[in-house]
Image (cartoon, rainbow, N blue to C red; front, side):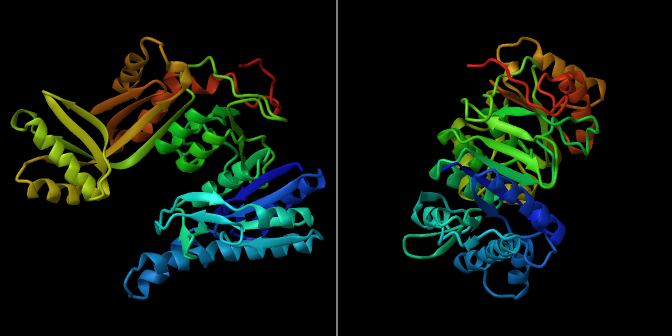
Length: 421
């Protein structure tokens, strides 16, 4: 049985017109003889009646105690509403459809309310409906514990639902529909000349997701990598071919092949703070204690630079005041400065290539952008810069590395076959 998973985000379901475009994608696949399992997010964005943020705001405005179990119970309703509405819309077109909650779809999770992990999927109910020739519409973002408690998977969790079902049901591909044509070489709001990327490897898109690109939930990409599930990112109602994320050859798709260009894409994260510890006054044990206490307070750190002459790291700006308090309680002094951003270049092509960091610094220097910290790996280079400079920095880096000249461009809209490993 040929099977695809189609996941639709909240913006793809926000209006009757959007929902009809989603239904068209589902029916087109069904008319090709493919079985379809649909995964849906809550409809719309903040302010829309059934969006997750709207439900959460309603809960908080009610003035009661924020109980994690009850919050998950409430928030799961948004996706359930979407599933019921989409199943009804599909049925109106003459195709048998059924809506399932995460629990009815057999998605079993641990008991971490608000950020649950899927531990297994009981596939029998979904397969039974597919064998009855139904299109199955699953409420994303949610599951159920062994004890029968409703849980949610964290923000963006519908991506996780879709990929987990793709792996469990051995789908040919998981199609992720949103309001953008594809993964872009940079944020088009900052770089108007940013272009869509035709194909990516799992490690590249995982790094881009972790470094601020709003493409996929990192946990979803990790699942796709682990189980070799091809992903196709497309725009709801769009005609562009989208971005294929893959590793090994999959039926109907060519394998991902590393590009010749050094940089694949450029991402950015704003709203950061830099913590500087007095290196000459602190022992290694004191630094260790600071990091442990910050972790216990739920503060995540990044861009860590620890050496005899320098002890710096970054945190989310929203945690700046909490970090000051935690460090002061230890009887230590630290500078916690806000107003920073991180720009990151991602690409497998930079591995082993000399002079990449020099080009990065040269491009940023020409714009008068001060680099506060750097970090690199085999497929990324990150720079901490003043947040006010993020737009010109991203544009300068995009231009310096000629990202728009990538060989994997859309061209005539057809995917070109390449030899690969």
